[in-house]
Image (cartoon, rainbow, N blue to C red; front, top):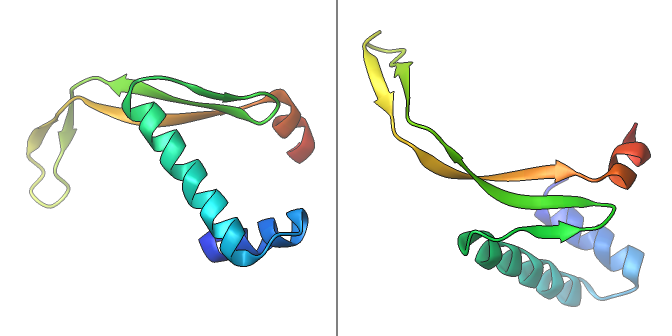
Length: 90
């Protein structure tokens, strides 16, 4: 499912227009992004938790040259599914 399909599904499920669903989805994405940027979690009970973790610097291999390279440390977004979501798809 891509973004436009999700907007259509949200509109149908909630009885909203596609324009209102797009605004709601965009607001959700913006809010989650701002919260993660501030190193805070977004916990949606039953659905899951968005958080930020730090990946340590590590060694890798450039597949083109076979040389060892250093992959720098970086922050990554992480999602952990909640129990209700896990049970619903399992």
